Amino acid sequence: MTTSRPSARLAGVWSFEQLAYWYVGGFIAKGMLGAMEAVAPTVVSVLGRSGAKGAQWFRTVLIRTPAAEREALQRIWMKAEAEGLAALEAGEQAELRHILARVEKALHEPLDRQAKKRLRQWARREYFETVNPRLARELGPLRMEEYEIHHRVPLEYARLFPRMDIHQGTNLVAVERTVHRSINRVWESVGQQSQRLDSRRWRNSPG
Image 1: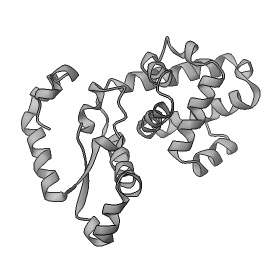
Image 2: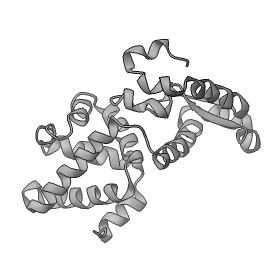
Image 3: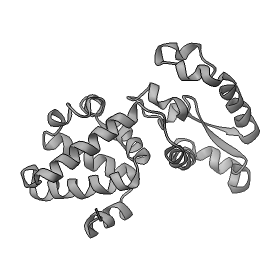
Image 4: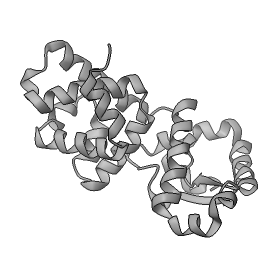
């Protein structure tokens, strides 16, 4: 289904953070959380008690969501915001439930390659512009290219922590490229054992 012009403009002008606050504020204001719980319990549990942190978390959810699903969600929610939830047709209500169910399911699955690529690109910008702009100034553009952003809880294991904002500042650190590769090799050496990790055993894993 094609994206409406207003939705396309919204996607092009607003940042992921602005979109996240728009969605979360709307979900809460329109009493949507109760209706969402059956198909997206993790989403509801985070947004229902986290305030601004919930919007930050949902921003990361949007980044990892495929573009087609983001566009469909924007289109449907723009109509709900403008005309009310009762204006949504049965097909639109079903599509909204389907998108939220897919978002919920994805939170508990390994990230695909494209999602990890988008998240790494965003993490780099987030870290140097917001988390640690002082380091960016000290390094300068050329030396900054020698650094990569390491997720203390790696993206590969985001599924173990579905309620965690994987891009929160405490989970990001800039490390020199060769050091980062060394850290990654440690995780790669875990091999198939890593597939059996769960959040309770995380503290005993390499970090």
